[in-house]
Picture 1 (cartoon, helix red, strand yellow):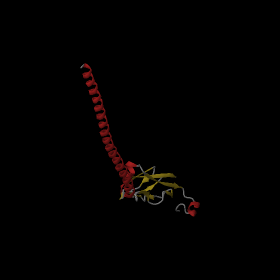
Picture 2 (cartoon, helix red, strand yellow):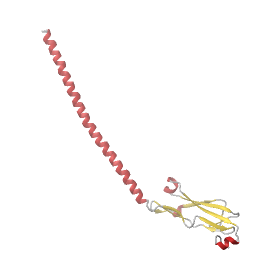
Picture 3 (cartoon, helix red, strand yellow):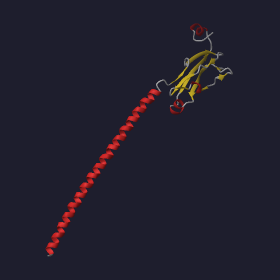
Length: 166
């Protein structure tokens, strides 16, 4: 009888091994299905993000298509000493809005008169720096425009050539 009971135990262990192997296979299959669902979700999220990024890029390009920050008039001016320069300002469009009235200026060693014009006491090249108080041109990109103003001593040649007024 002892042999029979030991044989039953062997069969039981064999059945348990088969049962365990089937459980492992079932678990692996269910994990593979879950993994497949997770992969599909991950791919869908990535595709949506890419579509959003590309769409956002083109929408941004469309909204900003007419944006500009430019000087009105010429960027280099020649004047004789004693003449004054009246600032012409800037044209600034940001995100489709006109923000031209939000500019500020700073200059080097030129005097700003009460009427808003600039004069200089000495011959030389001076500049006016224009900045716009706007998110796009001031905070995001730090854009400035510069106008050079050169004050020279008047000479007959310059008057004849029309470089300066006599």
